[in-house]
Image (tube, rainbow, N blue to C red; front, side, top):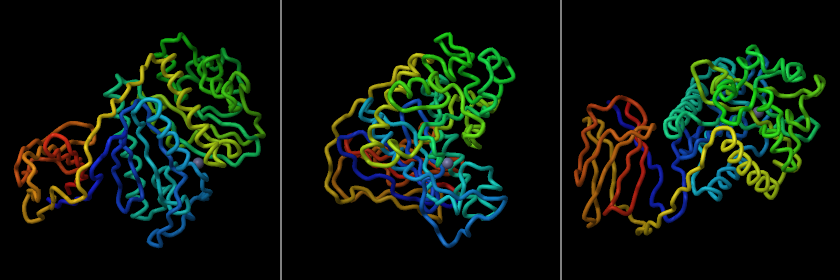
Length: 384
Ligand SMILES: [Zn+2]
């Protein structure tokens, strides 16, 4: 078994934080959250390694969604400000000309092995985040695939996988099983506690689009703008929305694609902050009304910051199935835990210099070391 180890986060001091797990070469980032919200950001990256050729397969679209990573970071900050907790966020740092994380593997990676590895990491991190949020919040996780559009009409476009001409139907038609069954909030139609129909959830008084419109962000579909005109190049949702929501019969996560306009939302730091704060309070309200989710208030505990020197050195020993821990300071106790990405502790040890990992299945784990019950260090370990 080969062990690959990388340092995750060193000492934490007294603030809310989310742990970050990186994919290969840091092309993909998973910010592990503790809220029932999962956000993916597939088109905001700008890394262009020469090891991945520019995508040309199958009429590749390569436009970047400008400032969507910056916007997601503001949304992360806004959630932390409102709750002390963080959403799960998965970022693709590769430029879309190298990898499209909102296409299937063949079209997204165009056959390049490095791009395909990153594609798989992005896909699997979303699954991991959803499984973790589903188990913690009783199956009520909510997913947002975050984008930016270049359409001239400055409004948010919410994609529930229903085309413009489908949204133009009557409420009665949209409430038939034919349309509900093809919606990214299929499961919410049957589980919501607000008595809302599918059409209500798309464009009723408490639809996400209506709440955003009321807050000063014009949105389609909504009560204010029930459906787009067919000439308006509206985005109805893409690969991620289909694969990671209840549109897929085996998934119960509800969600949607949010295509953000540029002016007033993505164009400046101030506007990104303002929109992020509004979006967070609206998502909280929306999930309270329809799913009775009370967002937790994460307690921010004070952890004394230690000296910058390492108190422990972790080194993989490729010759054996052990991880060596070398303690270099006179701390009394080192509590060690190996945790799966689903939050399950699979190994614990105290004051031991060598961890036997023979019995652990291959995969990605988090190694948590607590020094004298106060200072926590996180590492990522990959067992191959
Ligand atoms: Zn996009």
